[in-house]
Amino acid sequence: GAQLPRPTRRRIMAVANQKGGVGKTTTTVNIAVSLALHGNRVLVIDLDPQGNASTGLGVDHHAGVPSIYESLIDNVPLDEVVARVEGIPNLVCAPATIDLAGAEIELVSVVARESRLKRAIEAYPEELDYVLIDCPPSLGLLTVNALVAAEEVMIPIQCEYYALEGLGQLIRNIDLVQAHLNPKIEVSTILLTMYDRRTRLADQVEQEVRSYFTDKVLQAVIPRNVRVSEAPSYGQSVMTYDPGSRGATSYFEAAQEIAQRGAKLGGSA
Ligand code: ADP
Ligand code: MG
Image 1 (cartoon, rainbow, N blue to C red):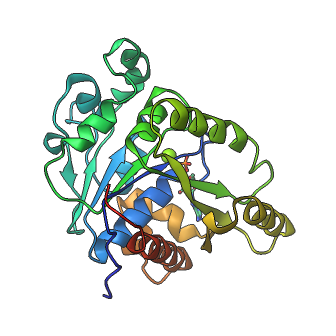
Image 2: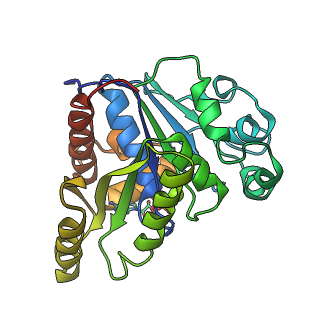
């Protein structure tokens, strides 16, 4: 199909929101596949011990598989833990196994504990257009590693009651990381997910988010769509599971906007 423009320089995006179930993993997987199917070289880093992004991409992540844990804790180079994603050229994934659940604690006593992921990504030998980091639903050291490694944060917001609760804490943490660890980090992208157009509430949340985050909010909105939630049980993104579904077309629109913004970035990293 038509290509999506490649960014002027590699973009590293942390997909973060400490609330669970807001669509972080779904967004990571479907944006990554959309970009990769349309000419971008993409690395997904699964930074959630649940390993849902690995599952959603059909990447093996049973205990014992080389994973992001080994890169973070044992200095195993990232290219030795990444797996190709079947059927999607240009897409690789560093899987998460259950070992990662211990990393939050183990990292505390590791040298340069906040910048382990950054170091691993910097040493990655292949050229990439996008690195998408699927964060866990917490603001611990794993998420801090993502915020130190990235230049952009993409925040999925579920269009429901309490959607904005907790966002203040996330923004404060991003500000702290920016002040002390990574001056480049910024919230670049907000994506409204699981939108139910039948409810007035969704519309109210959308208006509130757009008035606060203005042009960071993508025009594309992801509807609640059962095909999106079915896809992971087949080890697939909705982009390949049901490309004609409203979930897939909406995620493609979101990827298109992300890519168009990337093509306009100035300078080099
Ligand atoms: P998080 O990573 O933030 O915890 P997930 O991406 O895992 O959130 O999404 C939570 C649940 O909602 C999953 O079961 C997922 O399949 C489902 N889901 C996500 N987006 C949609 C959508 N647009 N339509 C229907 N179900 C969705
Ligand atoms: Mg998740």
